[in-house]
Structures are given as structure tokens and as C-alpha cells.
Image 1 (cartoon, rainbow, N blue to C red):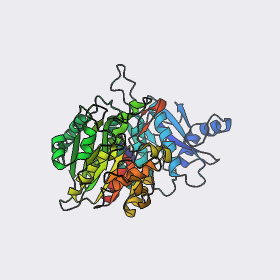
Image 2 (image 1 turned 120 degrees about the vertical axis):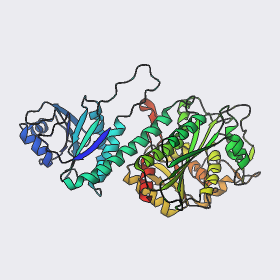
Image 3 (image 1 turned 60 degrees about the vertical axis):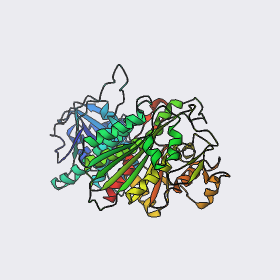
Image 4 (image 1 turned 135 degrees about the horizontal axis):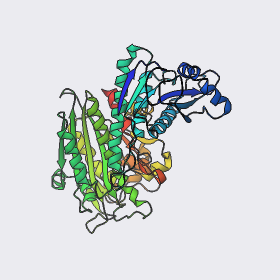
Length: 495
């Protein structure tokens, strides 16, 4: 898609679809008033008759209106705008507008949202979120269908600004929104791929492909022999149960001075999770292909960073493996030694994500990082605690945690901080090793984070548990691309 900011004359600007806001009240925004007056008071009459509902997110498509050069007009409800609307309501209306536009034959559209005021947000934020939402609305995944779904025709969107001096900065915001959606699209596609295609080797090839296309990017892939030499016994305890070799994938983006400490993103890449010997129930087990969405999200974030050429150093580490119940798989009661030298009693082989992540987090130390953030579909307990709306956030550094929380709000990709208190650590006590890999039935998401915290003492660290936010189930099953927006916002602030 292409987005452009422009000072456009509403009535004479030629567009295949004009997008205008309608508010709940007698006085409409100036752009809508102009259209209404030129077209025989069509908006006023539709409001009076009740055929147009101005509630937030409602839409009505009009065609061939005399007095207006555009072929179609999409009216989008804003709701009550006596005061500025909330960020959440703005997100709702642009998502509705994007979906409605994607269902029309329009190849281009012009959006007049300059009169919509969003609390605590500037015009550039509005433009960025719109570009992200409109691009996301066009995403389709039908790679494995014989009959492809009809692709949306929308190719170009003009974002109307009131003054010429706004054009340059608004275009930058639109570019950022488009790059965010591009990263989310990659994350969604990797997540949606079936487990027989998206294997650890596939992710390794994805990394090499990305590195070949960008001079500032390099890729390194460690196989099981190399991990054995490094002492990654915890990671290998998961990988050894599968015929697919585990891979530790390392991507380095050098966009700043060599002396500048990098940010490090670590993604859980369990490309399919049967639970191992602690086998999962069969219902909805197909969704365990999404257990690599942490890896998908850090790949997607890296793609957005590359597209925007952010002036930062960034390292992306992906711990990729399958968790399978073969004759070589780890058994409950096995004890393994992690790269850090700490020993772990495996009480449940379905708590495998933390076993691959702990070695990846130890490996991250060698980069002397500014901060490390791991992203993982780690626990069903986080879904119970937070549902599908917020990502669980844990951190050993309050400043880092607060920055991530604020980034989530700004990006419309929210997180919620959970406790990481020493009181929970005792639940990981083991009679036979330095720690157990589970902490019992209480506070499962917390004790999982406490486990990881034991391997992150040398740097500022945050853990994002995306088990509830990484994908949708049911009729709308599919990866969401979260938390690419949150991570990119954080890195842009860091830049």
C-alpha cells in the first residue's frame, strides 16, 4: 500500500472513496458540513431518518453524490465528540473504516480526519495508527488454499491535512505506520504457517534471507552440536525429543555506532508444542503451531526496524525447537544443566518454553546489552489472568517496565505489569536440583517469570507473556502480530 499526506480540496479532489467522520450531535465536523451542504444535506437527512447511526465505529457507504467529485463516500461514526475522544475509540473507528474500505472496489481513498480530536494525541499519532490499521485490514493468509480469496483492491490512501507545513511530518508518521504493519504481517504469516512447514530450519532460513537483503544485518545459526559445546543443556533437553534439529538463531542489526550497546530481543520459537511426555489434551492442539509467536514477533519487529532504518543496534535471538514425545524426549524427573551452570529438575515437559529461553537469555549476556526483552507464549496462566486484551509484563527494572507500559499505550498494544516478587521464588525449590521448571498450580505465569529472572541478573530485563494476545481462536483463528507495535514503539523511543 501507499500512503500520502496532502492538502486536498474536499469537493473537487478526485477519489474513488472519500472517508468522512460523523459525530453524535447537531454540529458536524467542518469537512462533513462542507460535504453535507454541497450534496443536498444528505448527512443531515440520513441522521434525521435514523438510517445513519453516528455511534463510534458505525459505517455507511454512499455512491455517486452530486456536488462531490468522489465516486463513493464512506461515513464513519465517531460518537460523542463534545470533548476529544479516547485513543481506544479512535482505534475502533479507524479499524471499522479500514474494514469497510477493504470490502469496496475502491483502489484509492481519501481520508478527512483532521477534525477528529483524540485525547493526549497529536495529528501524527492519528496518521500513524491509521496507516497501520488500514494496512492490517488488507492482510490475508490463503497460501495453502487452492482457491484464493479475493484480494482487496485498495492500493493508495491520501491523508488530508489542513496546512502544507504538516505534510512532511505526517508522511513520516504514515511511513512508520506502514512499516509497523509490515512487521506485523510477517509475524502473522510466520505464526499462521503450519508446523510441518515452519520448522526450526525454516526460521533459520528466514533469518538468512533477511540478512541477505540488508547490509546492516547479519545472521548466525547455531546447531545442536554448537549448543552442546556451549553447555546449553536446558535448550537441548527440549530439542532432543524431535527429529527436527533445534536452532539458536542470532540476527544482528547495526544501525548505530559500534560502541553503542545493543537492545536485545529474545523470541520463544517452539514451532510445535505437543507438551512432550507431559502430553497436551488433543482439543485445539493444532493451535500449538502458534507457540513460536514470540519468535515471529521479534522477526517482525526487526523487519520494521530495517524498513525504518532506525539508528540503533539491535540483536534478535530466536530459540527454535519442536517439543515432541519421542523415545529421546526428556522425562518428568530428569535433571539438566543450563548454560549458566544452574541445574534444573524437569517436573513437567510442557513447561518447555522457559527451558529454551533460559539458555538464550544467558547467551544474550555476551552482547553487553542495553536491555533484554524476551517474548513468549509462555503460560496458560497468563491467559486466565489477563485474557486476550493485555500482554503480561514482568521486569527486574522499573524504568524499563514503565517505558514498555507507556510504549504499549502509545502503540495501542497494551501490556500490564505483573509481580516479580521474591516471595514466589520458593515455589521453584527442588529437592534434587538448583530449581524446578514449574512452581505448582498457583501463580503459574508469575513463577514462570521468576524462573527466567534467575538467568537475567546481569542486565535490565523484561519478559512479555503473549499467550493470550498472540493469536485468536474460533471463527477468526489466526495470529495477531502482537506485540510488534509495542516493541517497535519502545525501540523508536530508545532511538
